[in-house]
Image (cartoon, rainbow, N blue to C red; front, side, top):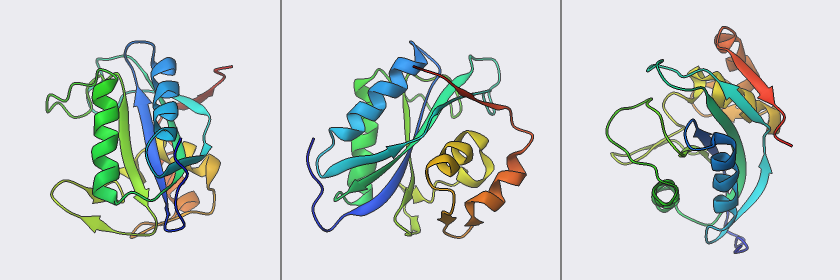
Length: 169
């Protein structure tokens, strides 16, 4: 694991899986985050079981969120997250919301708002998704989402989405 330099940014990464032993996939994703250059995993949420959003005819997901300190630029970090996904068998086929071995989303990068063709931060649907908000709230309850407001206030809008904290030992 590389130690981050003094010029680091706090970022939040969402992890999810619903194929090929999802708990093991998310654990492997957390491990891979800690092996990224100039990046240190500072905190990880519990694991949560959630129903699929959008495409419903697929297995439930296991989700978590990690807080990292990173010296990587946001686009570089996102490229590295995509590479970790590929290394874990993720095949992107344009079917958003479909089953996946490992999904890594750059949710937040400091307090920055980034609008580029290859990257949007905060993640565009972060504020609508219980599977992101609940684990994020667990590790950072007072977080403010740029352009969206205080995290705890956003949770109320997701009250109808089923989510269950699970014990993964």
